[in-house]
Structures are given as C-alpha cells and as structure tokens.
Amino acid sequence: MMIPFKKPKKGKLTKEQKLYNKALSSERILVEHVIGKMKIFKILANQFRNRLNQHDVIFKNVAGLYNLSLA
Image 1 (cartoon, helix red, strand yellow):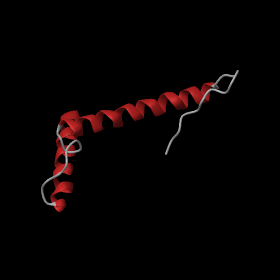
Image 2: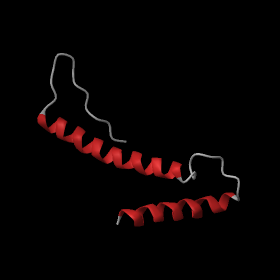
Image 3: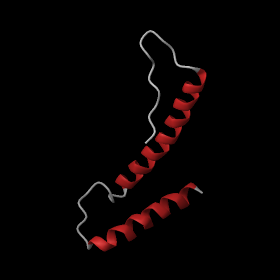
Image 4: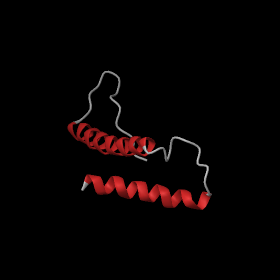
C-alpha cells in the first residue's frame, strides 16, 4: 500500500515528495479508470448469478478485452 505525503502544518513538501505524490496519483488514476470500465461491463457492479467458478473466467475475459483495446 502506497500512501502519499501530507503537507506538515506550517510547512512545505520537498521536491522529491511532490514528485512521489505526482507519480502515485498518475498510477492511481489508471487503476481507477480500469475499475470504472469493469463496472461498465457490470462484472463488478451487480451480484453475480452464475456459477462461482465462471466468475474468474468472465472477469479475465473482460479484463483482456479492455487491455486489448488499450494496445
């Protein structure tokens, strides 16, 4: 788990801390977008009503289709 640096009271962040926070936020937004796409496909948003062993297969297929569209 990666946690961004917080600005101390009456202080400033160093240049390295700001760069770290910027890099962390750019990675986080990619993850948030992928989760949003999974919700669009309804794989994470609704209760799964099929056999439980099929959930992984369907989830991986949707993830693969999304990754293919990025390429």
